Amino acid sequence: MTNNIIQLGVVGCGWAGCRAIESANATSRMKVIAIAERDTTRRKQAAEDNAVPYHYANYQELLENPNVEAVYLATSPDGRLQQVLDTLNAGKHVLVQKPHAIRAHEILEMETAAQESGKTIQFCYFMRHFPNNRQIRNAIQNGAIGEPFHARVFGKYNFIPTLDENSRWLHVYGQKGGSLGQHYSHELNLTWWWMGCPKPEWAFASKHVLYPQYDGPEGAAEDYFTGLLGCEGGKTVQIDCSRMSHSDSGSVVELYGTTGAITNGGISRFKDGEFVRETIEEPSEIDHGELPENVPVFYYELNHFAMAIAGEVAPDVDVSNAHIFMQILDALYDSAMNGEKVYI
Image (cartoon, rainbow, N blue to C red; front, side):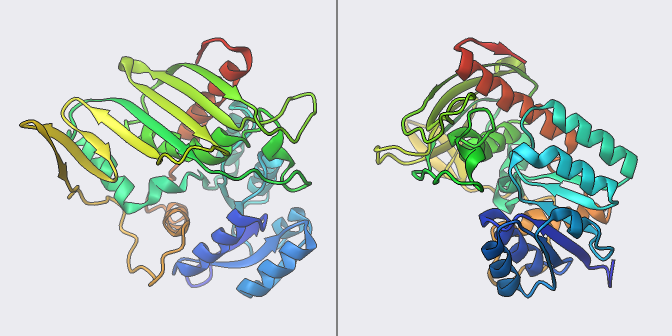
C-alpha cells in the first residue's frame, strides 16, 4: 500500500460501481486507480467523473495491473464466481457485491480460493454498516426489546429495468435479480442480522410475475415476492416485496421482541395503555474516524473493507455469513418455484 492508502480497482461501472468509486475516494484509506467496464460509454464517463487513471474494457487487464491491491466487483452474479476466483488468484483482496452468487455452493468455492490466497474477502450488504443499524443490533443483543421472535419487511421499488445486455440477469428467474434478490434482500439480510443471524431451518414462498420481459427456459424474474423464513428457536422473518406496485402504502422494516420492537429506527413499547418511543443510546462498535461532510451511500462499507484488509476488524459480511444467507435466498426462490416448503 502507498502511504497506507489501498489502491482499489472497480469492476463494473453501473449504479453500484459508480457509488463504490465515490465512496472509496471519500475515505482516507482508499483511492480508486483503475476501473473495468465493457460498455464504452459507462467506462469513459466513470473515468472522467472520478479522474481514474487506468480504465479497461476487460477486467483481466485490471487484475494484471500490479498497482491494484484490492478489487470491488460490481458485476452481475451470473459471472461472479469466476471473477472472484480470478481476483483472489491474482493476489488481490476482494469485496463482492450482492447478490453474491447464483447458488450457495459457489460461496464455498470462493472461501477455498480466499484461504489459499491469504487475501481478504468481504461480501456486500451495505445497510449493515450504517452506524444506526449497528447501534440497533447492539441494543437488541443487550436485551433492549427482550427476546426477538419475528421480523417483518414490506417494501416496493417501483421500477422495472429495460431488457438489455447489462440488465439481462435482472429478468431471469433464479439469478437473484427480481424484487427479492436485487432489491429487498438488503432488508431481509438486515432484519435477520438484527435478530442475531439465527440458523435457518425452512422457507415457504410464492411469487408473482406481472410484467415479464424475458421468455427463456428459466422463466421470468418475479415482480412480487412473498415469503416466510423459519429459524432455530421458532424465530421467523416475513417478507413481502415488489418492484412494481400500485399501492401507496408505506414500507415497513420492523423487528418484534417480547418487551419491545424496533420500528422507524428506534424502540417502540406498549406501556400503560399507550405506545411510547425510545431512542437508542448504544454506541457503534466500529469507529470510522473523521467523516466527510457528505457521506456517500457505500462509505461505511468501503471503509470497513479497508479496515478489514488492515486487520483492524473482521470482514462483514464474512464468508460463513454470506454462505448461510445465500442458502436462505436459494430456499426462498426454490419454494416459490415449486410451491412447497423447503428445508435448509
